[in-house]
Length: 78
Image 1 (cartoon, rainbow, N blue to C red):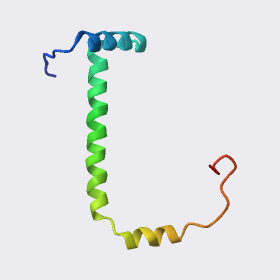
Image 2: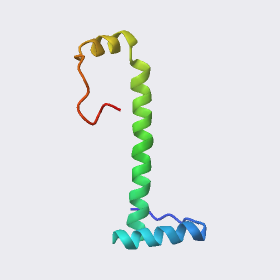
Image 3: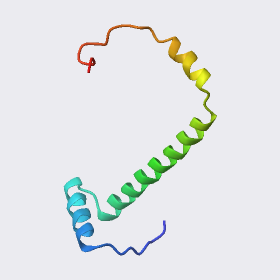
């Protein structure tokens, strides 16, 4: 594991402290989790962009054509 010195505005530090306390985790655990979530989101975005570039509209339409036409389930009509 490595150490990282980080400067934060006091307001952000205060929020982190409050949330970590509420979640019953250390500030280090909270920040580590938050950074991990951000990395995961960015990697997912990159993955989806790469997949989208490989996609073909023809194939998409072919798949959609297999979806049956029916009335929406109650509650889904909007």
